[in-house]
Length: 440
Image 1: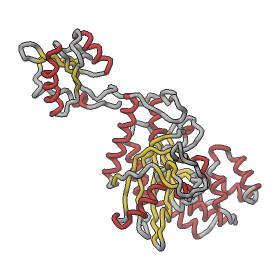
Image 2 (image 1 turned 135 degrees about the vertical axis):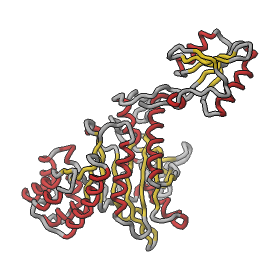
Image 3 (image 1 turned 30 degrees about the vertical axis):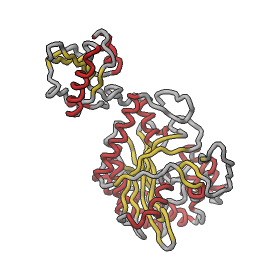
Image 4 (image 1 turned 30 degrees about the horizontal axis):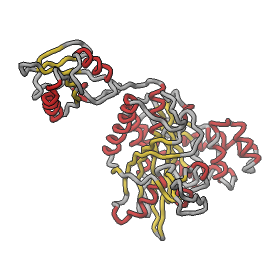
């Protein structure tokens, strides 16, 4: 983080830092809407039963109760803060299915809470930005391709430098492991998912001692995980390992569709990386993880995948594909590395001074005319010496100071250059670059 928060894991940004975060959110919002995603917001709380239905993560979930209430951890209707946006979205789809047009495309930007140990890139309260497409009964695979291209567009529009969207397919991996004779592909995937953290030897040991693989099977699984290409040449490399299985063929074909489209529309940004496993069992096909080039130690800044059952109700099933961007993780690195800065910390373009205490209403008239034309401004609170008023505007980071003279004329001063010129509140307009806080 750029600054140490007073309460670990709960970041608070200064105004200029918040402007950078807002720029990131506004950029993502713009790109998502260009791709046709509609915005939704879900409540901050769910029942504990709803949050825990996808796995044992109770240690990470923050329970919610009144201070005077008796906390009953065994009550399934007890409330808790959501730890991601996928579980709330699944409930939202089921409850509103009759009002949604499927396939339903949504984006969602909200705070989430997770009881993790705070460290670089990991927070207890943070903002996520999710996009998903969900279908009613079925969802064409083309959306897996489209999601990769949408995220590539979104991340390319951000001031984050180079990145790699690393893509794999669970069918490819599962088919390969079954073709090797390994009957518990989920256990193999969980081991492979630890590869970057613990290394080849430790993963091989897990595969042999805990999963029951032979040394040859473990070596083959690790060889598959070493394959990385920016084009569809990964197919030949997988075939060269000499493993055959029908599910492997399906996975190779699906991954090839994603990589082939990305190599044409987002060259160099999307990579076939057969080490990507994603430890969550509900992913069933395409899986995505994204790293910043040169900052791989930060971990994935954007991840997700295909799930054949986002939600279900009775005989109704809702498959989907989605990705989630860790906005706070991304912003913390942008600020820490000083990749970009805000041109100023306040939105005000002009500071309207007071010549005397009786001129406050006249100054407000000037401010009203400026605001009517979209120029953010503020009025001095008291008629101090002009030097003090100018210094205050400078401390605030306001670029222009406005003066109203006794004869009714006006002047505006650019305190960055010192230039002072006549101005009319009905027509004066600053340069386009000064109208909004610039991020550069």
